[in-house]
Image 1 (cartoon, rainbow, N blue to C red):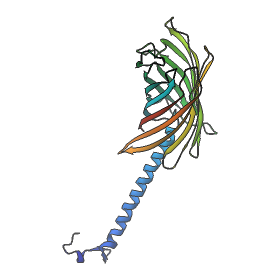
Image 2: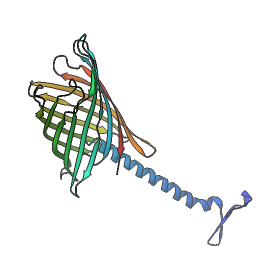
Image 3: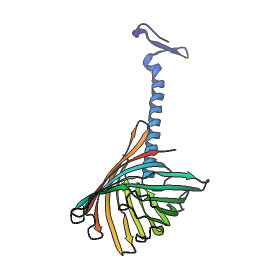
Image 4: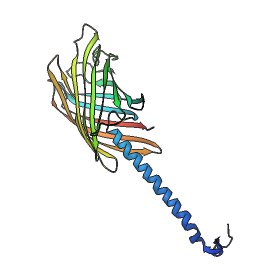
Length: 285
C-alpha cells in the first residue's frame, strides 16, 4: 500500500493499525538474516577454498601461474627466470577415488653464467604427474595419493632441457588440522629413452611442507623443493618461505603469493637465492 502523505503511512495487520516502521521490521529482520546467512556461506566457501589451496591433491580445478627468479649463478652471478604454468585437474573416478593430474610447463630465460657466453631461453621439459587419491581421508586424518610421474622432453632449446624421456613413481601424504597443513610430496624419475648424447637421469625430488592459514585466508608456509642427482651425487636444496592471500574478484576466487628462498646446498656455481610470485585461478565445483 502506497500513501501520498508520509505522515499518514500506515499498515493494517489483523485489524490493527501499525506504523510503517513496525510493519517493515519483520521484513527488514528477514532481509538482514538472509544477508548474514549469505555472508556466512561465502565465508565458509572461502575457508574451504583456502584449505584446499594448501592441499596439492585437493579435488579442486586450479591454474597456478608462477615466476621463479634466481640469482648468483656462476662466476658472473647470473640471473635465471622460470615462468611456470601448472594446471591441476581433478577427475572423479567413482564415489571412492579421484585422479588428480598435475602438469608443470616451464619457460626458462637464463643469462649466461660465464663471461662471453650466450643467454638461453625456451620452453623446458614438461613434468606430468598423476595421483590416484581416496575421496576421504584415513581414520586418523591423513590425505594421500600416488601414481606415475612422466618427464617429457618438450624443450625447444637443448640448453634448457634434458632431451630424455623419464618416468617413475610419485607420492604425496598430508594432514590438515586447525588451520595447519603438513606433509610431503616426493617423486623419483629415471630416464628411459632419448638422446644418447645426453647424460642419463636418476633424480629424487623431496618437498616436505608446513603451512598455516588464518581466519582471513592468509597462508604462511615453509617448504623445501630438494632434488638429489644420483648420477652426480649432488643435492640442490632451496628453503622457501611464502605468504599467500585468497581474494575474490566478483565470483572468481584468486590466490596471490609472494615468497623468497635461499639455497643451502647445491652444485658449484648454483644459485644463491631467489624470489617467487604466483597467481592461482580457482574453479570450485
